[in-house]
Amino acid sequence: MKNDFYLDERAYQELLDACNNLHFTEIVGGVVDFNLMYDDYWLQDSAVIENVKLVQGEWEIYLIFAHYKNPYRLIKRKITSCFCQSKAQTFARYMRRQAAKDQRGTLQVDQSMFQYNGN
Picture 1: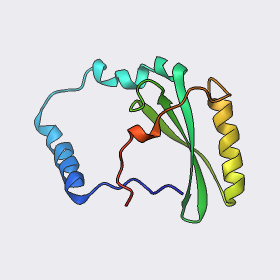
Picture 2 (picture 1 turned 135 degrees about the vertical axis):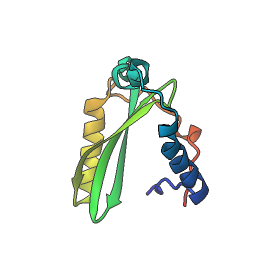
Picture 3 (picture 1 turned 60 degrees about the vertical axis):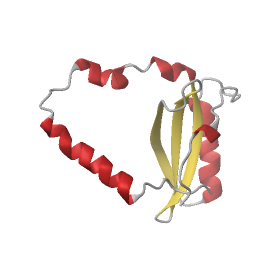
């Protein structure tokens, strides 16, 4: 099973400081700031990755939609949760095939491009 994402204390504090300092800019967000929400044409060519993990006694199923050319452009959505691991993995596999543009799985994302702390 894969380890959860870990953000060290220093990086977390810098992230909080940056969020807290946003109100000092006094600049209202524009329409361009919401392009990520509306500009969803890239989802047509996205690879779908299933992610099953144990959270508080339940196996939660997530689908991750990542563009195969730019894997840092991604969306992660929780689908459902199950009490049985094998049922969750089977359900996740079927949901991935259902959601994917290419059900054979030819669009792949190189997961080694993501560097994360395994703690």
